[in-house]
Length: 198
Image (cartoon, rainbow, N blue to C red):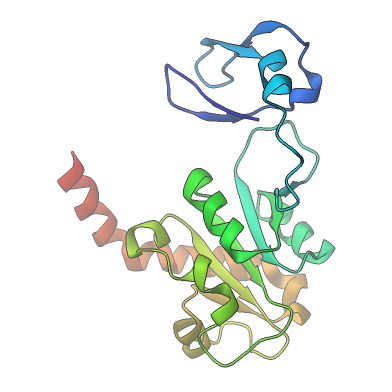
């Protein structure tokens, strides 16, 4: 269950199964504002279970998420945790796009069943975001058929980084360096956008 803090606008994820069947006040972990939540109203609207719902790792509901799109993989879940994110697995790219547009996870990990020549047509819903939305996340493509850090492949597939699963042992360092380079590359653009918004 998602709620947005009325004071600081932080989006919070709550495990509704831990809430009583009556109205309660839940404190925002960021600013402390008491937020009203009524699980009984959720149960009454009782939508059928969504088979395309994201699969979340067990966590406290807070913290940044890394979205894994395509095939679920324990190795990718672990890789997401190693770089400080809780993995959320969404198999279908259209649902992944919907989730992305609501949550804007800072890392998107694409794990296709098989790699096809560029572009990845099956992943078009999540890859073909607007440039503004794309800059809100760091996109990583995992494929046994590509070389880690292959800049040409990254460009052709429309991602920030390409990783071969055989290099997952060094993923934390590879990600750190690639993300730092990405931030330096877009620093002036980011500064200009902030200046225009300010």
